[in-house]
Length: 287
Image 1 (tube, rainbow, N blue to C red):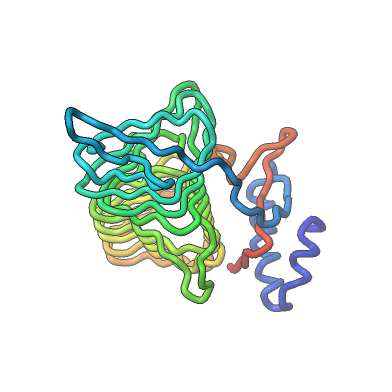
Image 2 (cartoon, helix red, strand yellow):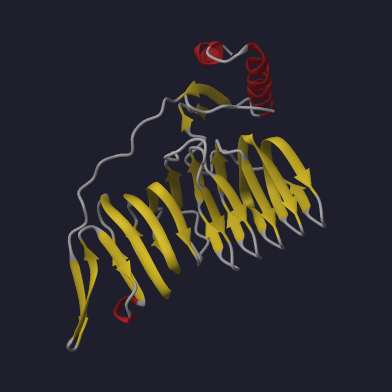
């Protein structure tokens, strides 16, 4: 526990005991993990996307304008965009159930974006081990699927809330699929209305709710939300592993525990033959 001594010393005595209990449980349950404190770092800085116009006959549409990706015109109703370098966009705006597919090929690409919103779908395709890492400053609020192909090639970092007293909430609903591993600074998560979540979920938020026939499941699902009340209600289902402050199960909900590989994702990384626990300096752990 020496690696966490400085972090623990900043907590009040009662809270410090609870944090130590959680950390000891993790280290005993996953002895292969090497403890490490990773301090908060700003999102990377990349060049802004260049303007792009798509056209057909006499009709045209500003697909990318001033850094905004506009998937809100019939000429972009099912558009595939090739990404071959790290880049930045101000916003990805959807409408009319249109679909944007980001093709990263066999590269590991990073995209920094302020927000993703609207009625539409965002997919990612990769080949030969490629992946997309999304850094989202504000929030994701799309009424549609995110990575419906269910590939293990999308990793999302969701930035801190502007007002910590009113943290952001990421909602997956309306039968949508959310297939990505998510690291959220302080966001709450709701998976409702027969939606589905597949991947690793790590959040410093206070609430994770799975309800209404929704599911959070895959062979590698981890819900690591030590501050949160994790609720499965009204037929919600979860397959995987959970670390939470409070766990509630009611209304026909179900949970099936399974062994998971913590290294199958970016948040529990492997270095020198040992995997590491990343603990953000701004996080508060409870059990």
